[in-house]
Length: 190
Image 1 (cartoon, rainbow, N blue to C red):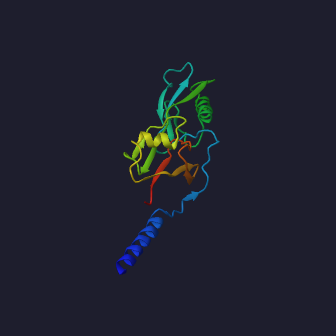
Image 2: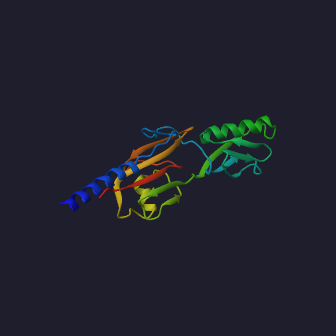
Image 3: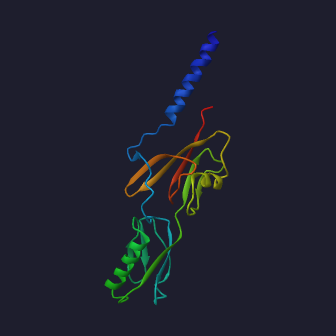
């Protein structure tokens, strides 16, 4: 009988420790609903094609660097992080006009490849993967080789940078992802 009580205590202690292990405390993370309705915001790692019509030497592929800037010939560095593609078009046109490089520039910005997303936890191959539009949590799990046998197939958390804030929220299999998201697949308790 004493052995049964020890096993029960061990099981209860393991369960409590498991619950606490899944709780994370961070001063920079807010547990709220993830925002999705706003337009896509550029950030480090996005690959862009910038076309300045009639100016082949200014037209080309650009990557937003770790500081959030792109470097345009004859203009220099321009801030790209946090803006939309349309806002960057306006910034490039204004910079070209102000530097007297092009008098009346017509600029187009296209996103060639988005920054990657990351998946951690109970998947076969956790890591960094290329983002594709209209991606869901389940699509991300498939790209990471599927669930491990320990996975909670309905237990997910998405961490997303929104402006200067980092937002963390529970997610479902059909939750839409954004570039730069970090998905965590939780472990089941039994």
